[in-house]
Amino acid sequence: MISRRDVMTAGVVGTFTGLTGSAAARELDSGAGQLPAVPSLGSSVEDNVRDMLYEVRGVQAAVRRINTSVTEAARVTGGALADLRERFALYLRTTGRFPEYIDVGTDVFYEAYDWHVRHQQSLQISRQAGSRVAIVFMFTQLVLRPEQERTFIGVPYDGA
Image (cartoon, rainbow, N blue to C red):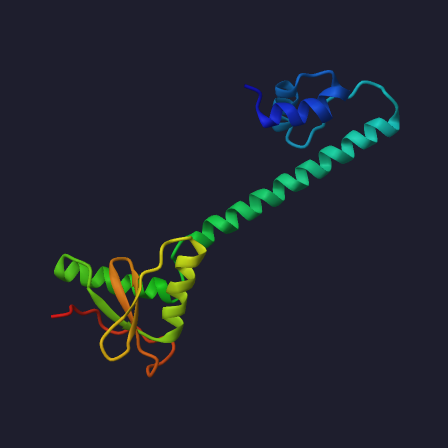
């Protein structure tokens, strides 16, 4: 099977350098900024190849930056959800299980909702007694308390 890299490098770089696609790719990867030797085909062709390789490296760097930012965004390491996880961890250490409920303000509720949407997780939203709305996050129902502060995180509790 031919890899995408072989096809792309064989078409662009391989034509001018006389290398096969995978050999050209290895030379580009190991070159650390050095361009492969280009046969003397004229300065305009050499300049075009250099320009194309420079652009490809720029695209590679942009993809790496995007990948890094997406990977970091996928973690629950900051904001209200990190505080919520701290409460869960304390409850888990104390009782040996996750809480059934925890009261939260609107910002925390929306952040949990956005987390589910961003990571394409299924939403489990329900109505509680007294017209309270709850969303399940990490085995616990976050009960919306709009009368509290927007960043409010209550004490975890069980239903009974």
